[in-house]
Image (cartoon, rainbow, N blue to C red; front, side):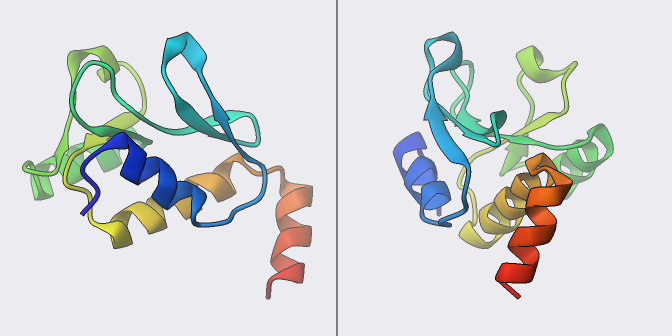
Length: 115
């Protein structure tokens, strides 16, 4: 289980995906993929912050409220918070969001090279 930022950060970087960088927006460490926010640990609540549509967020919170939750700060944004994160879920979410952030031309070339 992933229970803190150092573990999540190392796990995410361990996926060895290109164009992932460490940044410090608003004074808090986060990871960006292709210059866009990819994941970070919330300064408002003890949990990892991941991009999710509002429908995904609602479904995840309903399916597993012990893991997925929302802090009021993120209510108007497309994010979900997670605690005690299963590595399989984190890996799938990180890869999906990395692909979402990738420019189409880059992704096409990367997919061809890694097929």
